[in-house]
Amino acid sequence: MRAVVKEQVRSAAVLLVALTVLLGVVYPLAMTGIAQVVFPWQANGSLIRHNGKVVGSALIGQAFSDPKYFWSRPSATSPLPYNAGASSGSNLGPLNPRLRAAVEERLRALEEADPSAAGPVPADLVTASGSGLDPHISPAAAAYQVPRVARARGLSQQRVRELVARYTEGRQWGILGEPRVNVLKLNLALDELAARAGRR
Image: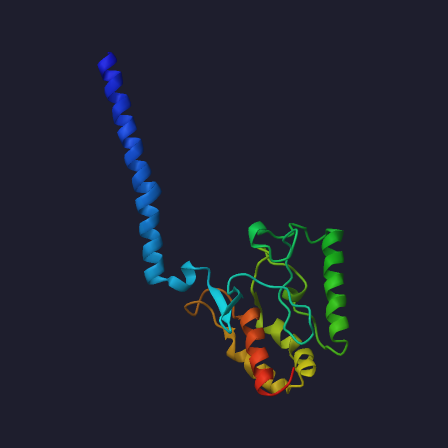
């Protein structure tokens, strides 16, 4: 009986060590290596570099409040907006007074930044996404901001619209999701366009 128990303990110990090495060391290293070879940009966080410096990720939104930039979709993460360590939505229902107050505050900010803005405000400019980290806005949300950005930059609306069109991404594989605009990429391109034009 003692010999049987001893054999079972030895087998269990060998299996524990083997699986720990296989699943805890070999497998993660293999997956990391494959990812670095096949998808290096994605595996390293989809980082966006500008003038040799990392300025953000294509997957994580950033806060923009200056009228000369396109504004991102609001974030409901805490304690700071676009906090990748605390991805979450507000979880506020449509009848919750806190949601109404947040939307009204965002509407006021948009109106103060551009009192002459016309037409309905796209929903994604006043409501947070489920993750709170969305780096994209809809083409409609970008188009709504074109007059304000063009005026603040001293650029023609046509040039800014062309830039928005260039940075509008289509549906994945032509069928998944909706067309979208990456706000950080668009704003970096806008800075470059304004610099070439000798403006702000």
